[in-house]
Image 1 (cartoon, helix red, strand yellow):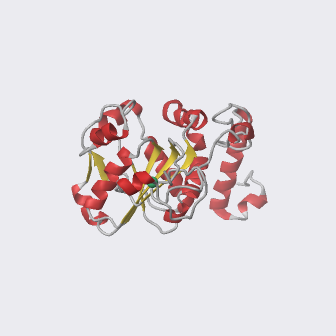
Image 2 (cartoon, rainbow, N blue to C red):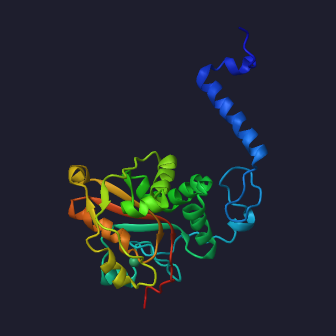
Image 3 (cartoon, rainbow, N blue to C red):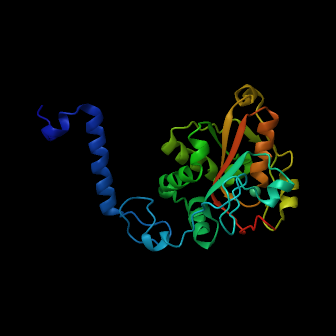
Length: 265
Ligand SMILES: [Zn+2]
């Protein structure tokens, strides 16, 4: 039977054909439901793209910052400068990096992902996080999403950290391992707690799964979460990985609560 498809499609074999069919399907979908900016709802060129009007309001985190925890400094200093907080109490992770300042604009993006199921922006988030964690990501390692307790997972239906880990994997090619860590018990909300209370709240909450201990020994890991608030959760996870003899642990988040630090005070 004569095919109804153009010759140029058939020439490249079935994979190319499937690719073109998908491309065509996307064009039809875009015509019916044009892609919208997850922040403004304005029409954009591709799914997940942030409209330029909203993009200029986002604040990307960059140097100058603490060489360990990534806290932004109020003015430029040498690259290896460490903040007073890290000098006083060295974090369990080796380095923490975040793509955005957590403010009303980035908060709206994260809420759209967590509560409105706007997963279309994930590829863009993956690219932003790759840029923020570039130094560690290019050295390789396994991406580990911060685990949710089973009860919370049932309520929310998905773990936003796992979605972000897959987004980072999509642009780096690094593996995601969601089964290496587990949350041993649910924790009360961290909202309104200071750094010390948050650390206490998550102490002993995470563990390395028994069968995964051999995979942790000598390995490099990148913990993935949506927001770094005080770093307590990421530190609790880094601590159990280090106790299981991980060689290097980085914390990488989409956004971070910041208070510019004067490193000389
Ligand atoms: Zn620091």
